[in-house]
Image (cartoon, rainbow, N blue to C red; front, side, top):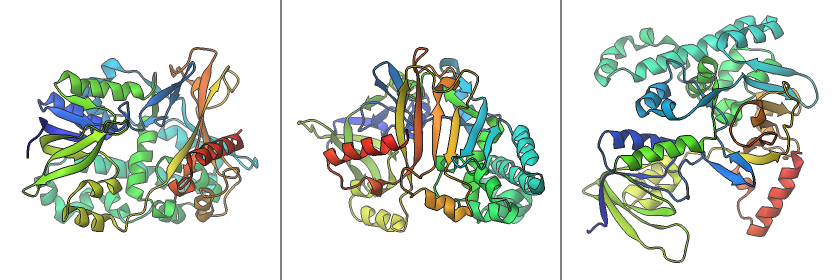
Length: 419
């Protein structure tokens, strides 16, 4: 088989995972080919322009960047902090109900958050303490485990429960089980789960370990926004790949992964849009698929296609987010008032099942978050203009099968319900 180009590594997709892998490998001397079906790199970490406004697509805040956070070491290695500014958010979030049953600001930092929650829910002090101890303990143990070489992990297996007690204690638990075991007040549970949509839509099917890693990062290191938008980070990582001899091709769709002698050896790809598809091939010793897992089997020949299809057959597609982007002539909240991220729920829930069910309620009744970029120096618009975004949990099946005209009409109807 002949190839148009030969590389060390081919990366399918240019989300932050692929960009980070590509940038690190490029700095190590590997020649990279990155193929992206969009016209810019970044996946959800992108921005777009509307008139005089820059809209943030999806990376509203990045967790962590504390001493334990693995991102810190990677960003320092890649020189990210020398080229980009990360703005620390003043608080974690505000959460309230439309019915007025509660209105609570989750402060930045573990100690501040714990103190504020215990002051509001003194009868739940023990559960609150257990919640934070578990979040921080699990996160610390996972990070320590990740840093150990495999031979050390193998030697540690007989005493694993002694070395990693928090991890062992929670590894088979879901988030709902944990909260129901340690916290009785449903209002407190709802406050703690205000930003659940960052990760999942159902606490009863969410891994406690995953939750601890993500939520623990926000409490330990805070939330951060990349000044100028997340596209700044994506573009910076893409530039590293190019500066070290790599190629990034946009508007390209990978049609197949080439398998030779049982190993991925290259890809076939073509233009994603346009009359002339211009089919091409590229060869590499390693192929990284930084794309949606359900799409990968269609790129593989049998028997590899069938094998992967079987292994993911019982997997359920995750929820997504509906985002409504808003440009303001002036800040939507008075100076000195309001929070960066405000989570709004219709009312206090009776149990966690009600929280999950609300994610599929009519849009007019569904909980949402409003992100107000005017609360920080986001660098997305010139004062007094500002931008914001409404977001809520949503699902692909709410939008499948619509014609282009019906899709546009539904977008208008849904967007108006949030105003």
